Length: 229
Image (cartoon, rainbow, N blue to C red):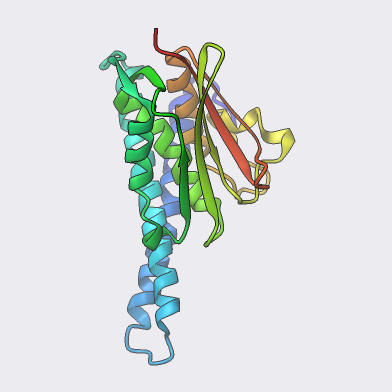
C-alpha cells in the first residue's frame, strides 16, 4: 500500500487503525476466554497464566504504539523540537529492561552495556524507539527464550542491538520493513508503522536503524547513534 495525493490521509488513518486493532483484538479475545471459563474446573492455572501473558504483552505493544504516534506527531507537526541531553546508555537501557518483568513476560532480558557509553539524544523520543524494539522482541521471542540488549562503541557511533529468538525477518524484507505502509508477506513480524516512526526518530538524531539475522536465530535490530562529543 502506498500513499497517493489526497488519499494519503485516508491511507495513514487506515494503517493506524489496522495497527491498533491487532493487539487490542488479541487482548480482548484472551479476556473473553478468561471470563467465559472462570468457573470451569478444567481450566488450569497454566492456561490462565498463558492468556494473561497474551493480554499483558499486547497491551504493552498497544501502549508503545500509541506513545510513538503521539511523540512523532508532535515532531512532524513542528510542535516539538528535539530536546537533546547527555544520558548514560546503561541507565536508559536498564530502565527499559526493568519494564519487562520476567515473571510476567516469561522471557529473560539480558543487558550487556559498558557503563562508559554516553549519547546525546532526546530522551523521550529515543527511549520510545528502544522500548518499541524491545517490545517487539518480547512479542516475537518464544516463551522461555532470552532477549539480549547489547550496546557497544564502534568508531564514532554507539550501537544498540536487540536480539530475539523469534521467526526473524526474511532477507528480502529487511529494507522494506521500515517503510510506512509495508508489512511482511507472512503478516507476522513487527509493527510496520512503529518501525517507520522509529526510523524517522533515529534519522532525526543523525543515526540509522537496521535489521539483520541474529546469531540467536531470530532478528537483530540495531540502532547506530553518533557518540556524545
